[in-house]
Image (cartoon, rainbow, N blue to C red; front, side, top):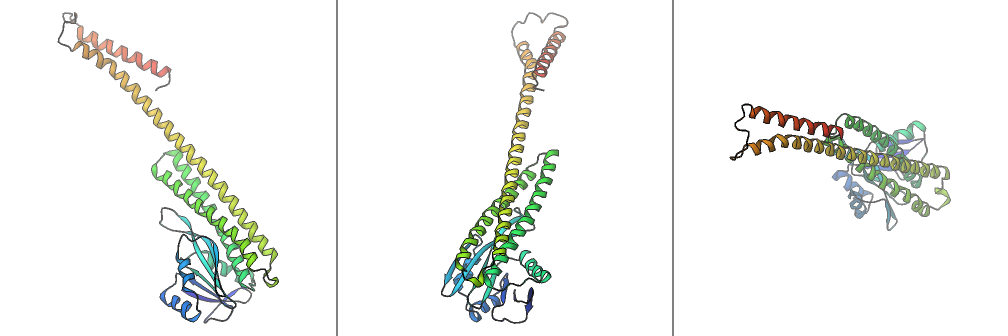
Length: 308
């Protein structure tokens, strides 16, 4: 699906392509590929690079074409890892601006709507790329808050009962934080590269560039804080689980020793040898009482040393 967006105090969708308009392509179909390759002459190698889900943020050139790959956050419903990042490629030349993303995200429609509400003018391709990075940083922060809420909820569940499902949930959220951290750092590096590429005075927007850098640093600091908190939480619950296992093993060992005392006495008196009390009228009761007393003594000792 593709949109032709022309900036008129915010991006306005047009019916057909115009020079210097932004062609936004999400989840491209074969018709979209034909349009990009045949009508706009977009290099096929660029489209293949963007299709790689593990592609890192970088720039590449081919003739007068420039490819800028960024990573943006995405929420996946019904997946074990609920948050991840995906590549988006911005392909530009002198009069063509194309963004290609092989996934449907919440960020791009939100960016378009934001420019309309605020009547933001995006005069050139460098500023469009900066706006994309700025929007990605804002969505990173939004998803980080959601991750923090899910971690808090999982902690409450673990406080009531430690289950494997809750621990796996925390582990998957930690994976999301790792993806976020790597992508944010990659986007930060891209700012410096893009400033070197677009050095002409017409492209300079110092205020916007500073805002983007500040927002990315905030997102980077936030993801590090949440990652440290989550790591500490998982370590704490791992220690709790280990301590619970040790407590259970101590109790099981104590019970085994207590039960071993009457078993040992019964074994001695069950031998086919002369035990000297077989002629006593209450020999069986005496043996049982001795077994019970010795077991009770063992129980009292284990209680004192807090094995029960």
